[in-house]
Image (cartoon, rainbow, N blue to C red):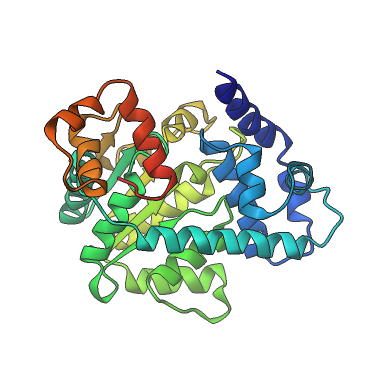
Length: 311
């Protein structure tokens, strides 16, 4: 019970103290600010995170990181960014070294992506954090991304048009002089086609946090699809649909393009977690697998996720 209270406290505290305007004022490059916001997003979306984990990952105390999120850190912010970049590198290396385990969830994600690719349409994959959506999409992109055919792009946490386009360009190994918005769009319009595939992870970030703000990134994605007919798959937490309904803007034009919505529940079935258990313990027997069932299997799978042995 104590752990649940502590978990709630850190996510709510960071969400309440995050000041985008002040973070944007730090004298650091745009990608460095994006890294701070990405780390804040990781804390607020990971139910297993607490302040001791933050200190272990960054080397900075909770009071320092709280000031960083409030935009009130007066020390060397570049050193904080360096620490976050090291954390990011360690995490990416761990993911790269982890084994991919196909299961019922990954198969459903792959079928949804394949439908979008075959029909040059838009698709939607929605589910709780850390359920395996990103890993499944990354595996699909790796298996079908020859010669720049597919790209998995993580939407930026700060919601900037320029940064989103920069990431899409980089994922397809494209270049445009100066990376201006106009140059990037022109290059993408020339390159994208029904033969390509664009997977947008963390797509809930495309919807502005202020329900009254114009959803320019969603319009950008929709226009890219309409102009080039490139298949687009939005991969998001359950917040995306809530944000769409709460927005002051009407999104029928976007929703009407999504022909293959996939909603994954947070409940893992034996078909989802047993392949992971067999990989970790190759000689595990039927009785031991059965003993892992029930309420305990969720805790086991969460621990597996934390070590990046994800679904």
